Image (tube, one colour):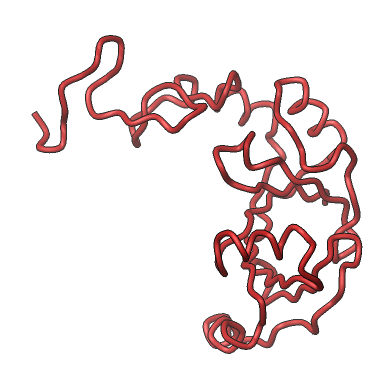
Length: 178
């Protein structure tokens, strides 16, 4: 028996901690068909979202000054010039293609509220999809909620939508069409 194994609760494998809203086995030997988030089996998600690809992560901060020099040194390249996204109440810049820095334009927006509640740090993870409207409709049909009913246009002119963290295990997930 593994040292970290625990006695199983009735109907639950030993050593499995489930995140709220998830079911099934955890670990590298888990069959994707056995794992689910809400009523969506991960094998089903991978099948129906075969176009899903990692796009970027976003870091929220009140100022870019503290983190930007480190990220530029790690990436070996300069950040893009900050761009304002008035519709989202933020200013953003990218270090490479995969790291987005965001800061609030005012104290009333979602990023400002995020910083007040959690402080600076990882804000969201983004996945690139084709047919954004179709993906949104599929997820809505399965009971997932978005922060907005309609897709909007992001900083690079691509259409985007955010899954509400309450529907995604506490993580803000952005879908980026492209």
